[in-house]
Length: 318
Picture 1 (cartoon, one colour):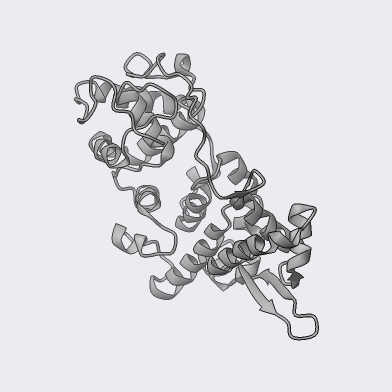
Picture 2: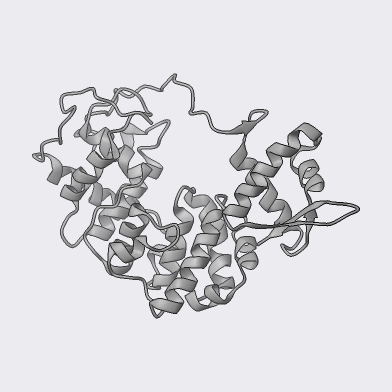
């Protein structure tokens, strides 16, 4: 997304004269309209960790379908650490971005071995864990250790950009660094967890990416972008694809195929190609091998090459 430089507040942090009223209005709305989600009612640091990794880049509705069975299959961090990577990836079915399953599994093993099964209390140690960046580390510190810290993901960035700056289109946002700085000034003392969840819910249900419901927003009278945003006619960002289908979707199809074969069965590249493409042509083999090697680097699949006379390439879940 590009950053908008329009509006009275362009280029500098907005004044805080209305910030208190904005915070109170959003927290009041959350008290009545906040979503009831299973990871909000647990005190288990492990279950919160699982939820935070699942929720990154994935809609809550999809997580709600997978989360209960996942924590039932792996009820503790030690149970997850003791499981095979194949079983963890199979249990991740339906969430996409399968590399996160590998990262979660590696994190569980690291925490079991070096942290006594506990979630670290400082950002540096959290960010040293596989797949945990600034956002996830902050979310864990707030959710598990009850810190009053800013937490900025794509939804929070969108919400705060729209409230505090006058934006032109629905895809405009302010620079990420600017939003982290603003977010740090807004966290209400002793209410960091509620504030984080309130902003998440506001972005998911009201201040949505493509069609914000401004009349239902608790801060519509204080939001600089309310009623002025228009849809963008700029084309979506292009990504690597084959015949109009993004490579990331083909990656998911490959993993789903291997899951369907119980994860442990070796499958030939030709069968993989036919399964995900329908018609697999020889000139597509180099593209498929690049896809497979990417999955191999991410720790999702194993690759084996047979000898003469068949000389086939086989893959299975790692």
